Length: 326
Image (cartoon, rainbow, N blue to C red):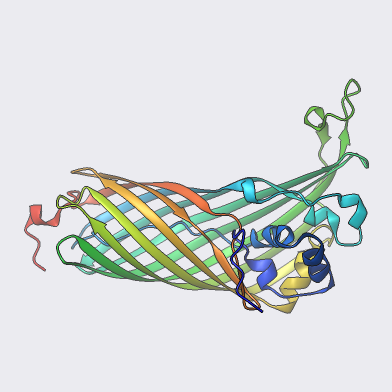
């Protein structure tokens, strides 16, 4: 077997969670397209850097992240393969949002501690025109993060950072099936369909803990107004407790979760930041969540996002302005 990094996108929890008949059949029929859907069950991680923080600086971060959704497509000819859980595998990513609100303090020049609240949201949809049924699945992660970072400047224009983070989250996977009433003037126009929602018919509720190590290398100009950072985050997440109510659309997910509760994920990211002289910083980033599954690496869908930071205490971007001792 070989390491597979083709069409890579966030392939996380489900595939990492083990095999099974449906998994093997789906992979044989659609290859990576099936794996991409399973990957979306992992929580999103928004990268950030504390490499230039100095003593008693306090910072507030507001971050937003999206997927490049072009990599998540519907599987072909779903009616032909009904025996391979088509209601789930046909789902196409419709919406994805990651938000993070973080607070950090640097009590020593080289050490930053912080906490954050974050959320990941995914929505998948599929409309079966022939059966006049619509299927929708939602994935929600509500997370609390606790972190400690060691960082230092070297060579005048470079800095390194090593960060540990513990995260605890509540996970809710929901799905519903609803009737679709087609427009009488254009019965084949799905965009004109009126979807009559019914109560949720599927619910998976659980808690997850994760630990991660992040390493980063930054470079900046002499005034420290511009910063570029390359980071790698390595994370292990473990599903601790869960309850599955009304098995239906997510039954395939449930089978995998029972086989293997944990998964390993890697996220390399590239960040560019502009620091104003006082108070504000703006960061843009791209990332590539990659999950390790049975000796293969999968990550078909990269991410991108922005972060706005406010330096609430010691707001100057350059510590030399305050004559900070090393």
